[in-house]
Each structure stands twice: as structure tokens, then as C-alpha cells.
Image (cartoon, rainbow, N blue to C red; front, side, top):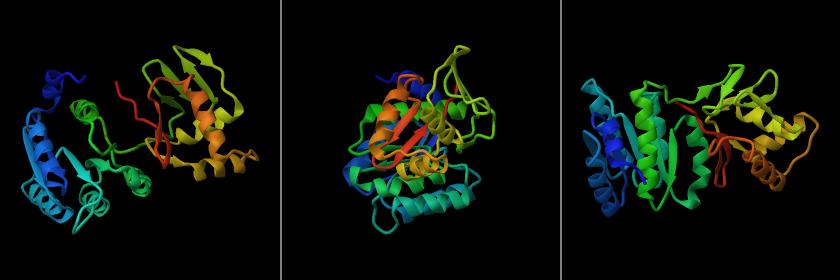
Length: 248
């Protein structure tokens, strides 16, 4: 259960734009957001949202967070996100998606969206995401995807992955990794936050003269999660896998 008081402490000076064409959902969610955010605007489609966004920029301001549905009339969430990133590449965008919209998610995530949330909305999940993002904002942590040319990748407070040595450490103790696990981690740590599809993964293994299929990828992920910090290796339903960005 999210601590509402803690959330409010991080969001009370922030602004959010919520874009959703379903009237009841838009109204109800907007009322919930008003309990936490200093400014909450809403729009029923991408065109109206883009007009609000441009107006905000013209006033010398910018929304801290954009929360948008994908399927909407006039302008959908995919085009809206592209337009927003043209105006402000560092904008934080959270996307709401139904289970049958997974074909949109990989391009959106690789564009740079911060998070996606499945519909119908689990409000505890939404508030948890908003808390994490607001903490990042308070720490002035960049929200665009992290390009990891770094040799050492912090996966969690106690977990570190050394890309040059192909070693995983937990509290400075080495964690045994198989060759297949190393290939997988090397790929996902190339860009933390980027989603790699099954096709991407198969191609990388093939380039190293190894074979793997979708079923074996799932098995590999299941075993690897036992060696990694909780919730660090994320499965994006119908899309692929990624390491979630870590911040203290």
C-alpha cells in the first residue's frame, strides 16, 4: 500500500497532464491526481493535449509528467508522444495500454517513455509509479534512458555488473553466471531501460554462434531472476525484456 503522505511530499509542487478519451475514467483519475499534484490538467484526445502542452511551453513552463492513453480519437497516444518528444526530448511520459496494444509498446519505450501501465488501471500501481518518478525528479535524476558505455552498471544498491569482466557482484561477492546468462546481461546492459525483443535476443546469440528460442529465453529469464535483485529484470508482456533503471 502506497503511503499517501510520502507521495504528497514528492508531488505537491509538481504538475501533470492526463490524456484519456473515456470520460468517466478521465474525470475519476483526475480527481485522484488532484489529491497529490499542485497542477492537474486533462484532455480527451491527443490534439487537445498537444495544444495544452504547447501553451504550457509558451508560458515558460512544462508539465513534470504526462500520463496518456494509447488509443484515442483525432490523435492517438503514439503520435502525441512523438510530438511531445520533438518539443521536449526529456519529457517524462507514462503510457496507459490495454493488453491488445502491445505492438505499440516497443517503439514507445524505445522512444524514451518512462513507464507503461496496463488498463484497467490499478491505482496502487499508478501511485507507486508516480512516487518513483517524483523521487527521481526531486533528486534531479535524468529520466531519459541511460546509455551504458560505463564499465560498471549499478543494478541495485548491492548489485553491480562489470561489463568488461562479465561479472555480477552482490555485496562485492561474485555471482556465478553461465555463458548464456552473460550474453543476455551484456545485451540488456547496453542500454538500461531499453526493451529488447525476442528477435533481438535470438540475433545476438546467433552472432555468437549460439542458439536460443522464445521458450528457452523464458527459462533463462526465470533462472537469472534468482541471481538478480528483485524487480530489476522486467518482462514486457508480448514485447520483450529490459533492466529497469536504478536510482538510490
